[in-house]
Image (cartoon, rainbow, N blue to C red):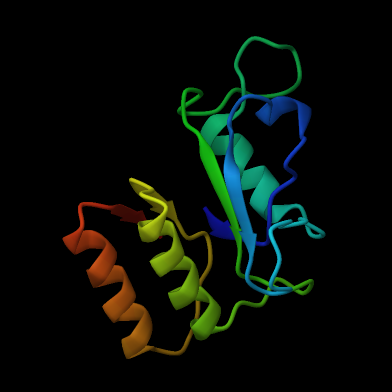
Length: 125
């Protein structure tokens, strides 16, 4: 999941967070989610069902790989998006979620998405 980060210890995501995580904004392995958007999207995808902690995810058996590409304002550069996609493919992710948008176009981003798709990765944007 490429987003604003991920709360790696969120109680509703317990057991659904992969051991690998990356923060491409701060260049470390702790994708702290200051805005909460990435954690919310992860919950929609994989939150545990039946634990009385809110909603259940649409795929509660999913394992989330948190890759932070957006800064504290929620802004992602095309460079970080491309790096994130390539990293996700390298980590053998099978599905990439990109809950973001842009008015601009980027051939590098298009190429990275095509690269992922050519390796059998489902890209949801």
